[in-house]
Image (cartoon, rainbow, N blue to C red):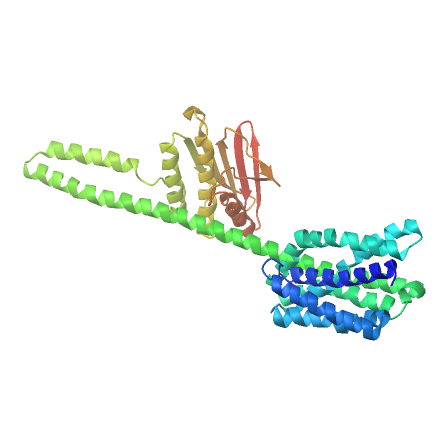
Length: 426
């Protein structure tokens, strides 16, 4: 046995070891946690290959490789390692496909040495470990994720390595059609690749669309949840205020009762006037003919007043029947909350202001909200991005957009002359 034959046999054996290790890693069965299984599998398959090599010879063994080596390895991963059938097939067929770069590098270098098979085997041996490291380090983490996918996706991912596997054996091992078939084989391969590409593209686009829709629905649900929390907080605040009013009312009645019993009518009248002034300051302002909108606008008007923000409201629209009032409340509350937050960033209260206009034009409900802003926000695709990275922030704008989209309206966010503007037509 000369050196060339010895190196060829070594390369032949390394192909098997390379394939087993790559298959196990692609099936999420790493070496550090399963050293014994690796050793037993490599020794067992190496002995099988050696026996078949001695009995059948290299040419026959190569043709019988799918039945004698690949199929048992697939069954081992499926029933011993308890992996999904498609995952098992993907792991083994992908490992076979990834053996190709070994041969490619060997052939490439051998090209400069008159295709010397000794050079081919030496180079293939040398690139085995680096190539295996690349597969383990960069490729296997992504292939492993396939175990979480459904059967359809697994089947589609199985198509590419299996197609290569079948065509490789059909056109180069069992026949030489790849080299002698001429234009017919070339056209067949081109058509097959295009067909496979179309199938994968259609399904990937479909999956991407569904994923995007699911993300939008999830984002909307998150926005709705946050909005619900805001409304609950507002109701809780109103309930606390109502409790305070009831408590104060008892004191007022006791004081008035005392004044009447002591015939202090002037004190009673003066006290009633003071109560009237106090109540008028906390009365819900009637901006329009819709009580829910009046409540929301009054709430944020009080909030703006507390933060020393000048707030002007003009509501000339008279009909809101075409919309769910909860949607309008959500749209306005998110917009006003963002506006108040932007205004408070200005240290000078004199520079804080908000202007809200709600009117009808050409059969549409139009909303214009303007507020002062210290710094212009960052926009992406015409949508302002939240600079607050805390959980629960950044969904208000998305909620506003979802309301406008629900009624097939148009919206626009922009800044000009130190002002942030939101305009919508529903």
